[in-house]
Every structure is written in structure tokens, then in C-alpha cells.
Length: 450
Image (cartoon, rainbow, N blue to C red; front, side, top):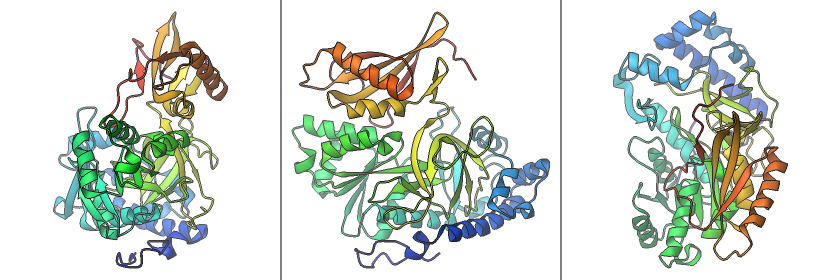
């Protein structure tokens, strides 16, 4: 679809008004048409999909409604990695010859084998156009000076800066430089917008204060885009970062296996608008594989709709999310991601109760007698799992640690149902993250599986 020119008036509310405000029936019709073509492309051109579809007894022509997608098999990250190793460089999920691939990103490779995400030129251009649309919805405009502070080294978030360039903003490709250097860049360029993780936004603001700078008055940042952690969609965390910077914080969600940011907050900040013309989303019960009701939590399963280089059909992300299709106050009608509440591999089961770090984060960040930093420590005592929540007192707070601990303990029990121990530590005790924060320390010798 053709996008509006980036040279249009800055005050127009939408990047692509017809697309962004169409009815839900029009969204569904668009997705069904794209999905039919995409399944045919995958089946005809990817050896992996031809084999797995045949084994499951399904063909692209079997898809007559969006619900029919549930008949097709799912795929996981481990399968992506295995197929890439079996047939380097791109694996047999690829549906185009390598000569048609113009760009690849790679996952972090925490298991030792980074998985690649290939793009044709059409794939890449469509991705960057979506990034421009997303930035526009968050209020970024051609008059802004945008500082991209994400890793450029094979990281899928690196090229997202081109979306800011496409809409006409002055862009600074800062990357992951030391905090002191980044603060110098922000001051030198008088950057009005920046993108990083929630933890690093917090850390950078604190670093500025330690250097004698007030982020609210000595810097020009008015918008902070964050991604990579759940914090940006936790109102309490967002409010603390906004208070530190005097800037507006917008949460984004990205996925290395498809493309950069797939969803982002508009200026209403009521959920993240989904790239619904690029990615179809299902929210399923992780145990049964059945869809959950709208607004309920489940595992997010994604299907690409336009990515030619490597289609992903029913990719199990491991992210626990909730969605809504209610129109937003901004006038956009796309599905909205109402938060990544955790990951299946981050979920703790404490004496039969599920708990995510984000559940605790909201409580810690809401208590202004605490610094906002926290850690969950899991141990096994007498064959039972126990949880200790470590949190810091804020500088200048003179309340006894026991009083702060008892208050937080009551709140955790009331909200999550988990009876956790709470330890209040002195300020600046817990480590500060310069990228993604590690919130869980699992000290169990052997973790039970369910």
C-alpha cells in the first residue's frame, strides 16, 4: 500500500488514514486475502512448509476463513534453529533464493546459535514503512531530532531508525555507546526523542543526575520509546520514567524473528497498535492450544502475512499477552496489544500459583518509598519452592525496612496470591541494567517442570 508522503503537513493525525481507520470487517477481509496468498507462497516455495503441511493433511486452499488457520501446524524457535543448522545459511523455511535476500538480522543467540531473519527488498521496505507509521502514531514528526540508542550489530531493532528517517526526522545513529557518551550526544544534538529499553532509560536518567544534570531541564528529550521489557506497558514504571525525564514514554514491542517493532503506543497510550496488515495474531491457552477470550492472557502465536523471504506460519513466541479489538480513542481500529505480561520461560510457579516479574514490578514501582529496582529470588527449601522479593528503599526515606517490607508483602499477597518473603535493601544495592534487566535469580538446584 502506498504511504502518504513524509513531506506532508506535520499536523495530519495518521500516516495512512484509510488503512489505520478502516472497520474491523475490512481488517479481517484484508488479512484473509493476504493470508491466502502467503500460505500459497510458503507451500510452493519453502521445502519445510510443503513437508509439514502435507504431514498435517492441510493445503493452502483449505483456508476459507481466518479460523481455518488453526488447522495448520505451529512452529517454535527451536525448529527455526534446527532447520537453519541443517541447511545453512538460511534453512529450508526460506521461500526465496538467497540472491533475492538483501538483509539479515540475527537473534542474540543466548543458546549459542543465533538464528537469522532474512528480508527481500520488498520485505525490508514494507517493514520500514510500518516503522514510520508507528513513529507517527507516537507523535514523532519531521521537526524532531531522533536519537536511536539500540544495538546496530545484527540486531533487528537497528534498522528501525530508518522509519524515523522516512517520516523526515533528523536521525542520530548513536547505537549502544557508554552512558556518559550518550548523554553528551543528547546534549550536543538537543535530541527530542530517544529509543532504548525501560531499564536503560531509568539508568540513563539516574546517571545524568549523578553527573549533575537534570534530564527535565538540561536535556531536550520529550519522547522516549522503549522496548525489550514489559516495563513500558506497566503504568507505574512508565510514570516513574516520565517523572525522571519530564518526557512522554511510549512502549514498543519487537520480535527478532519477524521484524523490528511490530506494535507501538499512540499518543493515547492505551495499548500498542499492532502491525495487523503484516502479522496475524492468535492468543492461545499454552496447555490446550485453544483461543482465549479477548482480553484474557494467553501465549501469542504469530503468522506473517507479507514477508516473502522466510514466512512464519503460527510461530509460538512464548510471550504471555492480552489483546483488544476495541477502537482506540485516537481513531485507529487495529488490534491493540494490552501488554506482554511475561514469558512462559520467565513464569514462576510458587506452590501452584503462577507469577511473572511484571506482576511484582507494578507494585514496586507504585510505592514511592522504594527506588523502583527489584529482584525475585527463588529457592527450594524442604522440597518446597519459596520466593523472596528484594527491593530497595529510596534515598531519603527514613521508614524502618520492616515497615516497608510488611507493606509490600501484603500488596504482593493481595494482587498475586503468592505469600512471598520481602527484603528491603539499602539504596543502590541492586545492579543497574544497561540493557535488559535480569529480574529473576533462580537458586533451585533442579526446577520442576509442569
